[in-house]
Length: 212
Image (cartoon, rainbow, N blue to C red; front, side):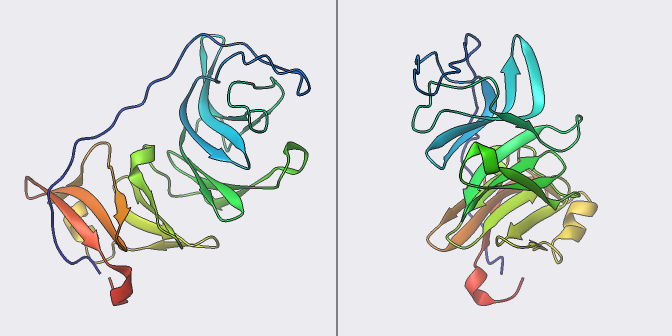
């Protein structure tokens, strides 16, 4: 249940490096640097980077991973392209036994323990997020803001829409999300910054109350 409002903080920004070389031999790492990209996380002792920059070209739907335990060593063959060529990877979040991959319009899960058995499966083909700050993790669920739709949750098996009662305010323009979103989970509650009737507010969701 969304129960109140609070003040809003400032958005964060991301940066990337441009100089990089691959380290293709797992037995002889060279510490050549971290793969440039738009969003990253750690999972299974590896660093994962989405929406990579390679040879001065952007690969919007490419996901790469490092040598195990070595974020400055990457093999050129260790990658997978997610979804359709027109999709942009926007956020990466480890969740349970898999990695959740958000694009601007879809969600995917990567299962497996080693590159040889990595498998990517779709979670949703109709909802995604614009940036990493539009996702917040609780112990049991991922919450995320899908652009022009509002808040959803993912429990490891299915996606649930949480904004039924507030969606009319989005549709009429009374409510707008703040760029770049910057949702947060703290003390058992979800905090969602929005603009409501021209004023900056933060919606507070308490899942323990059992209703929207």
